[in-house]
Structure formats: structure tokens, C-alpha cells
Amino acid sequence: MGDRFDLDEVLRARGPERYELHRQLLNPQLPRMLHAIGFDKIYTRAEGAYLFDEQGADYLDMLAGFGVFALGRHHPEIRQALHDVLDAGLADLTQFDAPPLAGPLAEKLLAHAPHLDRVYFGNSGTEAVESALKFARYATKRKRILYCSNAFHGLTTGSLSVNGADSFRKGFGPLLPDTAVPLGDLDALERELRRGNVAGLLVEPIQGKGVAVAPPGYLARAQQLLHEHGALLIADEVQCGMARTGDFFAYQHEPDVRPDLVAVAKALSGGYVPVGATLGTDAIFGKVYSSMDRVLVHDSTFGSNAQAMAAGLATLHVLERDAVADNARAMGELLISRLRELLGRYELLGDIRGRGLMIGIEFRRPDSPRLRAKWTALQLARKGMFAQTVVHALFHRHRILTQVSGDHIEVIKLIPPLIIGEAEVDRFVAAFTDVLDDAHNGNSLTWDFGRTLVRQARSR
Ligand SMILES: Cc1ncc(COP(=O)(O)O)c(C=O)c1O
Image 1 (cartoon, rainbow, N blue to C red):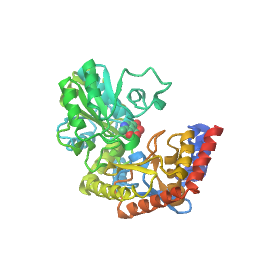
Image 2: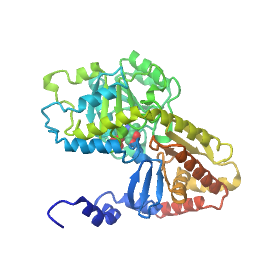
Image 3: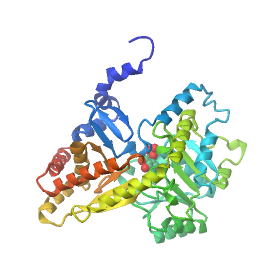
Image 4: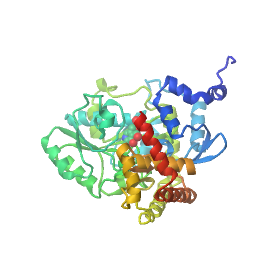
């Protein structure tokens, strides 16, 4: 190895060892899981909605890095913006100046939420949520945050306190004193508000887990109740925001919903640079940053860094210019309607739901005894196992990457890049139909894989 750092050389020499190194030095369960399900590919390149392996085979990416690649991978204009910002040689992160790109990005974000006035930039989704929790508690001088059953807001301790799944929380307590209410249940919300000391309700307008959509009218009525009780509405748009559902923010689907705080991350930098943003009202920010003494009361070393801001500006530019939200809406409607056509045809298919390109496919217990026995065997081993077999079959038979949308539920989730077209919709629907055909014909690869998973689970 020469004196100069050579990234290509690191990739060439060490890339092939990636799974082994991960096993030895990082989270050992990740490679173990990937080997077990045969997802341990070596991808060599990626473009748009596709990943390519060593043999050059293309994989349709309906997962988009958990939703970060809204504009697809390697968008040339975002890449260029990143090259440009490095070439500009800015005096970034001086910590004692106003960073030049943060203002323009805040301005662009706020243009999509005109009732809000200010932005705090952090480095991830969970940090955007943590900031909202702190701001809400400080501004209201109250302690309790209400959150929704099945919610996911990130895995740092504050966000974990408002996580709706015990599997994530267990063993990490004591957490913040918060209370879950079911998404859509206004009576439960009102009951908790009456108990008092509520700073706000944190809610994903469309939940990532299970792709549960807030019922019509819920957010507006919740907002009214919260405000009547002096509490805040906090929207977590980390996954469903940034044009994914066909509106810039998912809460905009219905008029009159104006959250007091909005958390954004994931797609904000086009998938390139970790970033998070918390948007809020002047009144809230004015309380948190109420005097010069409190200038750094909530801050982060890398917040507003030039690369994240540049990537964010380029991403918003492209999203707006190319009307990406309209494409997400149109392709989402097409995909949802094509999938709904399958509902009557396959008894294993229970529900197709979502909005834009955030889509949940739920499976259900079949009626025919032949399939029901197989389904029950999988369910006994682990709930959610059938959805895993479908994810597996889509990947191995059709080279399509999807995910189950949470533990112990029979739902797979589609959150592809928002730039997909009819070719990708056709490919997915044809592949999914083939997998369902296979599953319904009983003696199939899909069930065989389910049995393998069960055996593995038992041996563990
Ligand atoms: C709705 C929601 N909020 C917050 C987060 C946390 O984001 P991050 O993983 O960037 O911390 C996620 C991540 O999936 C999310 O889906």
C-alpha cells in the first residue's frame, strides 16, 4: 500500500470480506441473518431504482434504503451538488458563524409548511424526533408525550420511550413517562389529555409498522383536542414525508391539519448524507432559545453541515422541478389498484393499503383447509412468517428487494424510490402474482422456505 489513501484499493482488497468483517467487528447477527435467508449478495453498483450484483443481474429496489433514496440512487444532480460543495472549500462547522447553506434549506423546507417558522437541523430521524420531544416538553412545561400503539420513531432513548413495540423497549428502561393511545382513537386521546400534564401527541400520519393510515379526520380532530388542552401536535414525517405519499407532507392529505412540530429526515438529503430536521413555530423555538444564555441549549456538532445542506437543497430542487410528488401519487395509485385487483383471486391476500408509494400488503389466514394447515404451522412458529416467505420468494425468484413491515405482523411494505415508472410497477405486480400463484399451489418453494425458517428458529 502506498503513502496516499486509496479508497478504490480498500474496496477492492477488503470489499470481498465485508460479511466476515461485519461478523467479527460489528453486529454479528446481521451477516448471520443475511446468510440464513440468502440475502448475502455482493452488490457492485446501483442506479435509480436498481441494484446490480457481481454478475450484473439487476435487483428492483422496493425498499430504497428504508426510504432514503426518494430520487433513486446516484441521482446526477445530487452527486454534482456534493462534488461542488467539497470543491467550494467552505469554512464549514466553524461553530462560530452562520452556516451559509442552512438558511436556504430551511427556507425551502418551510415553504412546504407555511404555518411553521423555524428549523433545527440534526443528523438523523431519531434526532429530529428527540428534538421535537424536547421542544414540546420545554415549550409546554409539561412532561407527558402521548404516542400511538405500533409507532416507530427511532431507537435512541427518547424516541424509544415513544416506540409502540415492546420488543424494542424491553430491557432498556426506565424510559420517559409516556403513554400510548391507539392511532385513530380520539376517545383514548381525550381521556389522556384530561389526565393532564400532556406536552403533545407524536404521530406518524402513516405508520411505518403495518402501513396503518390515520383514519380520515383523525389528525384534524386530534389537533383540535390537543390545542383545547394546551398540548401540541407533533407529526413524524421521517418516513412518510418528502413527497412519498403524493403530498409533500403526509399530513397535508387533509385540509386544516397544521402540526406544531414536524420531524423530517431520510429522503431529505437524497440518501447521501445523514440529516434530520425539526420544523416548528416561532412560539416554540422562542421559548427554547429564549435568551443568549440558551443559545446552545439544544444543538449538535454536525447539524447544518455543508454536505447535508447541499444535498438537501439539490434534493428539494429536483423534487419540486420534476414534480416527483405527482409521480409518487400516480404510480402509487396504479400499483395499489393493480394489487387490489388480486384481492379476490388469492385467499392468502387480506388487504392492500397505503397512499402514494408507501404501500402495505397484508396476508390473512386462508379459508381452504389445505392452505390453512400450512399457514397455521408457520404461525405457530412465529407470527409474520408467511410475509417473510413472500419477501424471500420475491428476492430469490424475481430479484426484487422488499421488507416485512415489522415483527410479528403479516404485512410487507413497499417504499420504492419515488421515480419508479410503469415498467417497475409491471415487474412488481407480475412477480408478486407469480409468488402468490406458487403459494396457493401448496407444494411450493414459498412454503418450503417457510419450513426452513421454522426449523432454523427452532434450532436457535
Ligand atoms: C417514522 C420514523 N421516525 C423515525 C425514524 C428514525 O430514523 P433514523 O433511523 O434516521 O434514526 C424512522 C426510521 O425508520 C421512522 O420510520
